[in-house]
Length: 606
Ligand code: F6R
Image 1 (cartoon, rainbow, N blue to C red):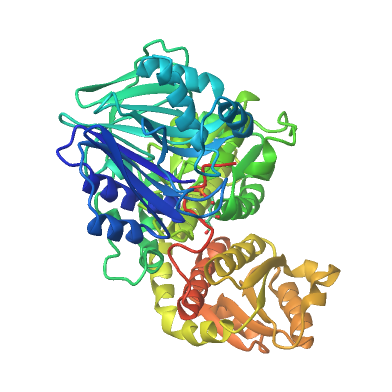
Image 2 (cartoon, protein in one colour):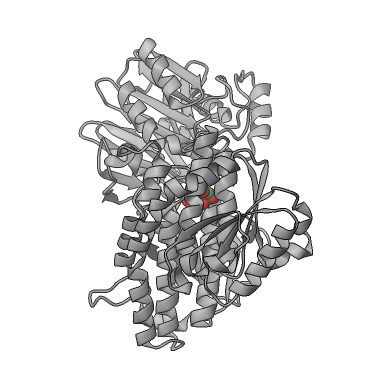
């Protein structure tokens, strides 16, 4: 996914670039680098590993210069090494940083090598540096060089380039990967998102796909792919400056787990109208006309979609299909059965989800973006935006964004059901009242840390774990398993409890941890029987349940209880102890909780 930054027109840009990179480290943390233009040469520092390694290097060996670029990498093409770290310099004249994938890089590289260009890395990105070099060597202007390069590359990109003979100038361009240009006072900036620039300026231009811009200290010129000048609005962003603060917690994830009561309350406020009634940003007549919904999302957001399917079909009797975004657009889906596509994304930048939403939009579906980051690409491109108000989520594993998504989705389900006449306004208001209890119920569940610690301690020695849930708790089980595997690297899978006997039960052996979700709902008895089958075969049952359902499984080895809750909202409340279990297990194992290996927060490659 990678994060890119750039600055022109500063007294000394290196610290500024480093500060911006710190705000983007969530995008990738395999390696990083900064380049500055110092007189007639580029000075570069690159380091493998976390940004602190680069920071230390730059402390020992500082860089000077008014303008420069920076990059934090999530490796795609080429292993994690210093030579594959960005920036990439070509011919001592051009330097680039890039986020995305240049799909035709092999062909371009072969052509460039045949012309005598010498490559220093295995990355796809380096071709950009050589393409710019070739264009400048032909005497093209920065704009024309940009147009030339864009006409040659295929794939996704947010890029910034500098040329040694054009000091204080950056060429920037994007296609599908996010990019924000910041306008300073006698300075100009670029970043993968506005948060990277929040300490520098609030005046931001978001480029459209295939836009090209020339950024100088005295202003920004934007062109389309042909090089024709175009106007792009300057927007004032309200990016939080306080986002890089752990607020006294050990990890962002721990802080974000604790922020859930607020995240839920703020999201609920966004789904409540001026009369205090449950409402959505979708006009009521449009809601009433929805006759089929396709949900598009990835990872944790996809599990939120799967929970919502149960809610929407149950309450509103509207058919819902949940699609893994990366699968959707390439399998030629039949779209005529649905009138509305809901793209769910914390970041609003997951490329798979963005592309799937575009695909649905092109097929004529009304698109709704359920996003946490205002101003993100999905938020800007969706026909309508349904916001979650979880605040910045920095820990790579999603926690508060997930419960905020569920909050928005249960509100959506109830409002849709009422608009379609499937439930009465009184029932909608009753659901609203129950949702209002969630911040306090989640707050109480946060007191479970001490109780869960010994369970987590035992889990650290496991090589594998199963998560089981039935009905609406099935996707919650998959989300629980995802949290455990991505944070603690313990293999974990979520299954529908009733499906165990059709195969997965073969995995059960003496002592295998089975995290079992149980609520006081219609399928409680059947779910308990499925657990009995697992226990009888030696599984160690870790029951995660409501107070009132706990007695149903009296053979559990450990029991983690949340307060009783309306059955509709059990998926949301039961998610919290699972987050705590995964967090504490990872903490005890000593893994990197906020930045687990191989992952990145915002996945802007396909
Ligand atoms: C897991 C996690 C990921 C994201 C997924 C989609 O904890 O955070 O699975 O949910 O990459 O990201 P967004 O929601 O930003 O589109």
